[in-house]
Image 1 (cartoon, rainbow, N blue to C red):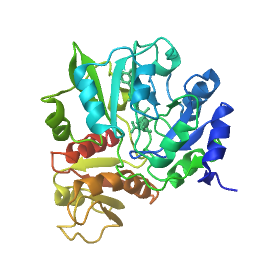
Image 2: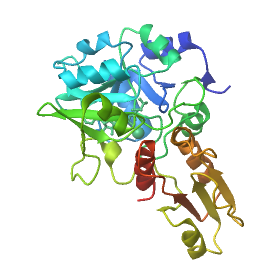
Image 3: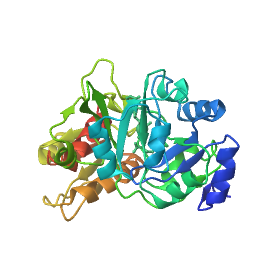
Length: 318
Ligand code: TXA
Ligand code: MG
């Protein structure tokens, strides 16, 4: 029997028994466990082979629940919650004492969000505790956007993937913290920076080049296929350079009409960045299965979600 199922009651039972369930969100699938169960949380790190210094995001059922988790909520954080929850903005705020150190890797802040997926919100309402949920992939590998991706990674390790269909946003939440009450983006994500700035004004990005990254989603190499992958603006030149190899192409639209390529995926025929984002990880999963010598990915336009997609592709190609 497969592990993919739509049975929310079964997910409730497993989670109440300190086991893990993969859950759908609007961004990517998460590998979820009770934040107050040391057993479940340790199992999350073990299953993902994730280092303990990398803290987890806490998923809550409602806006009101936030005050059970965090101590101080800056004005701009309140504005973000009002504008974007439920949705793909994760806030890093001062934690309450009841949040276990295992969740936050010993930091005095906790990352928290209210996901926008009806099944997972229903699940959270039926539980007496929030869910810690990192993306449901082994450390450094491509994040899952379909139940089948999770099944492939973890079918022998977890009992259930709650089937909520393909993820609509397709890349992880945007992570925003506060330093001296000023908002800072620690990870570019599903909500374009321009949209965030419309609500709270100019915001700094500390997404890269930090020696000790605030959010290891910022680690230089992350979200990576096993196949050698390069990112380029100059598609035709790169193809020429790798002539004779088994090439896979990951391109935004299909303007070039390129031939003689072993495997090609177009992210959005209509030039739509949202569509491209939601197709990105599934495309990387598919390309990685083709036994190619090299994946050549096209750099997307550098605005809106294009920025977030380029960020992920850069990390996939390090
Ligand atoms: O869209 C998402 O955010 C997905 C879905 C499942 O909700 N989750 C996700 O989790 O991407 P994960 O564990 O793959 O990435 C969480 C990121 C990590 O880079 C971690 O370092 C950062 O959040 N993070 C967690 N707590 C933090 C904290 N207190 N301060 C700074 N960064 C934190
Ligand atoms: Mg992740």
